Amino acid sequence: MTPTALDRFRMDDRVAIITGAGKGIGAAIADALASAGADCVLVARTAADLDSVAESVRARGRRALAIAGDVNDLALLARVVEQAQAELGRIDCVVNNAGGSRSRPLLKTKVDELEHSFHFNVSVPFELVRLAVPAMLAVGGGSVVNISSVAAKNAVRGNLAHGLTKAALNALTRLMAAELAPKIRVNAVLPGAIETDALRGWLGMMDPDVRATMIQNTPMRRNGVPDDIADAVLYLCSPASSYVTGELLKVDGMAADDTIPHQFPDL
Image 1 (cartoon, one colour):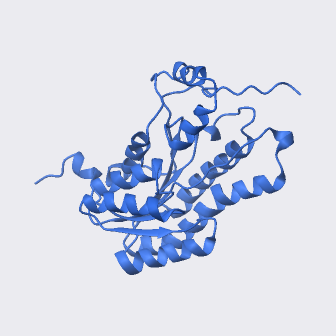
Image 2 (tube, rainbow, N blue to C red; image 1 turned 135 degrees about the horizontal axis):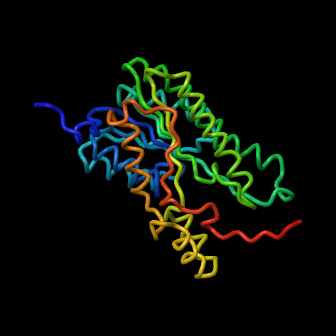
Image 3 (tube, rainbow, N blue to C red; image 1 turned 30 degrees about the vertical axis):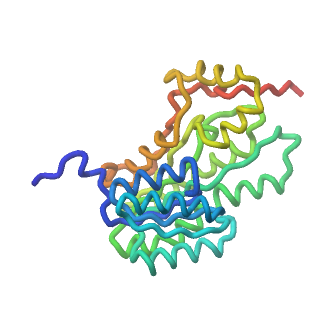
């Protein structure tokens, strides 16, 4: 039977490593890839969160390997790659979802804060990909998806550390794509405002009008949900995107640069 368009989104018997997989976007990515047939290596700091996501993956008939730890510890990344190969037999995809930064205005930002952000958002994804490449080449190729942010494309006051280091992740994505082609594709997804626990917690501390302003500044008239990002990741991991590499895919409802109100006065 001739494969259909939907067949090209299948990932049967492939193995994907997903960092930050314990909740929110990472958990949604694991569910999406498992639904398409992939086995999942789940990495996050909280074992209880991982156990819940692993149970969901297994309920879809797929294998799940849960590894609790902080990805900022580069030694953990080597263990993740080794265990994935030893227990699941191969590596086809790496999804660098763990990351983030707490930004402050420029004059209140310290160098050590920037360096920590670079480590988390750039060095960690680089090292995991570097370690996983030989395993992906051994099975004929693979796909890397980095979860960046629309903040990387916008110049908004008060968002220095996050915007700067996610922009660096975008550059890393394209540079890795150039070096790893044609066997390994490397792309990034740039989420906008996504309704995760973190965003809801931040909104809970803000004026109720902030959410309405965000929605009004977004042509799709809603904030995103984790499944919006997970579906984009599935596309970029699957054979459906076999001719796509080095791309930075915004998934933000076409939101304005200043979707989230920031009020920082002139110096």
